[in-house]
Amino acid sequence: MLELRDVSYTYTSYRVFARHTRHILRDISLKLDFNDTLAIMGRSGCGKSTLAKIACGLLTPNVRKDSTQVLFCSKPLLLRSLAQRRAFYAQVQILFQDCIGSLNPTLSCVENCLEPLMYLKGIHKEQGIEQLRVLAKDLGLSDDILFRQVGGISGGEAQRICLLRALSIEPKLLILDESTSGLDYELAMMIIAYLKQWRLATGASILLITHDDEVAYRLCDRVRIINSQGMLEP
Image (cartoon, rainbow, N blue to C red; front, side, top):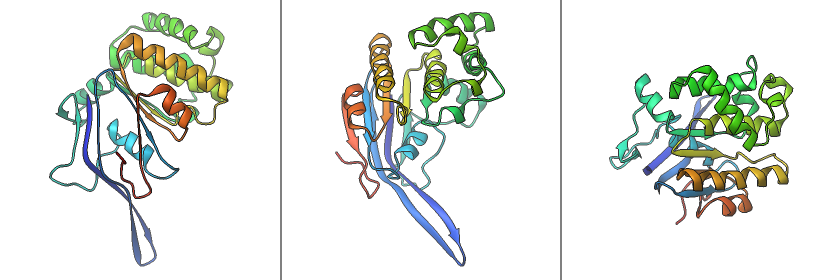
């Protein structure tokens, strides 16, 4: 499904009379099949989130070799046109650590979830609301929370709202970037348990970015580590 070949990435900062380039990822290669789970671990700042953004098309490798490729369903990942982006994000969803920051504060929670559902799947508003209400109950979200403004919910509720938004699309690939970080243990384990059931029911794949050993081994069949040089260990 998703394959990265010899992917590298650098960040450049400019100072007085100098340019500093930091190699954050070096020659990363990985493959995620259909109905597969993979956790990427590593210390803070090692490039895990950068890797997640490359995997979902938000960044492109900026140190290229002839062998550098990002493939989705065995084809080069191209998101140049609106049609390409719609087709890709109807199959791939990403959940970031900063859930509150990824929600539009001027909309209610249900409106935040409806926009991508209607845009990517072509579902009418009334049908979308009913689908969201059913899925929200599975995630322990009441109608009261679903119809609140974003400013009136907690961090844990925001996390589940963002998960609701992603899962309502019925993605083939779900990318989780430190999505349980900052949550209390009970809520984090509830989300992990739900995601395991969801994956078994749908056959979807999960790419998990985390620093938490327990979360990685509970949710994923494979675990790989990015080392301090930005390279993926076997």
